[in-house]
Amino acid sequence: MAEYKLLLPSMGEGVMEATIISWLFNEGDMVKEDDSVVEIATDKVDSDVPTPVSGKIVKILKQKDEVAKIGEAIAILEVAGEGEAIAEQPQEPKSHAEVKTELPNVEPEIVKGLEESMESAKISTGLPATDLYLSPLVKSIVQQENISEAELNSIKGSGLEGRITKEDILHFVKNRGTQKMEEKVEVKASPVAKPTSQTSAPIAVSEGDEVIQMDRVRKIIADAMVNSKRTSPHVTSFIESDVTNVVRWRAKHKDIFEKREGEKLTFMPIFVRAVVKAIQDFPMINVSVDGDKIIKKKNINIGMATALPDGNLIVPVIKNADQLSLSGLAKAINDLAYRARNKKLRPEDTQGATYTISNVGSFGNLMGTPIIPQPQVAILAIGAIVKKPAVLETKDGDVIAIRQLMFMSHSYDHRVVDGSLGGMFLKHVHDYLQNWDMNTEI
Image 1 (cartoon, rainbow, N blue to C red):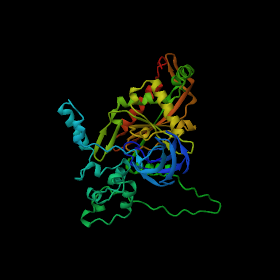
Image 2 (image 1 turned 60 degrees about the horizontal axis):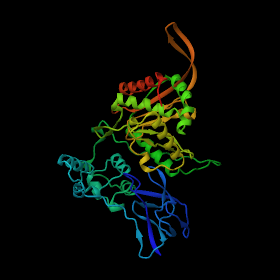
Image 3 (image 1 turned 90 degrees about the vertical axis):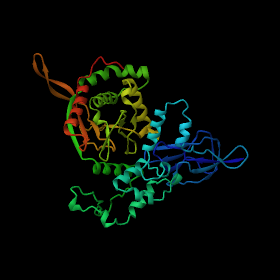
Image 4 (image 1 turned 180 degrees about the horizontal axis):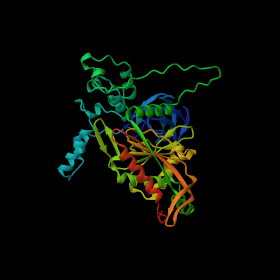
């Protein structure tokens, strides 16, 4: 018999570690190839890790709540065969020269462009990119705490290949020494003071009160929401839309679509279609902010805020939503929603959103003031569709009729989105929905 080391696999770009949630098998249990053996959690998503081989679990190396690095052994299996311990090794990143040699007959300009792209991914500290790789979470902490390049150089990373992990950066911040006087900025001389961390006053706990510890996901959500409010000056615009045509169109097509495709036809594909069209009209909504630079996104990736059975929230992403038909949007939305609620999302399913929609109407709410998910600059909340009397303009004069009305609220980052842009974008979403063509095909 031979030993096989089960390694923590790559979990997507920017994910360098994961926390063990629970083992689905015990030491001594037999497992088959592709069996899910352990549940893990990253700062992006929860998922299962399957075993690529069949065998018996002889040793669990990482226990519940322990953190493992990508490529680190988390268990040892006994498998058929003879020899020393074997393991699937993570592929080492290729150097510029290796990449270049793998591009035969490629124009020099293209190779140069690839090299420049690789160089742009480095942190300008004089160290190779592989020695100072920063995950998105670590980057956000670095920016939030104004950690300098010199300070980054002084941090000894405990991650794979010496990379700086979340724990490393938080430990550094906690033990950060007082800056030299000449490096300080006097508050009087600066019109904008850096926000300081506030310590909440102690909360009195009375007899009978229940103290509930936040779970890992709730802590991540809490940190993200506070960080977003600290980063972006939020402004919210509201509009009420007559979506009677949308309701009638869906009622006409939902049974036909389900019979044909085996998929539910919800309102969300229609909302996404309207948002995508408005983004194409106003591409400066589809941006991110990096210091004093505005990054205009090429792709339109729509985040879809989804409530989980445990009460937490996750935002799977519809990639390249502008390239999907209504039918394609419906299938993508149903698939992501199903996998989100059943903990089947992959880390890449929650990455790369450029604009987000939150359907607060699914909870019976008329409207909300959503918080922008960083590093996006805007988010749309969709309210409940309610029958109301409304004034209609006809060729014979104004009449009152029962219509299907819905509020939308658009929160945007006032650093880069002014009221005119934020308001016009919302008005275009409103127009696309209110003037929905009843002859639209799906």
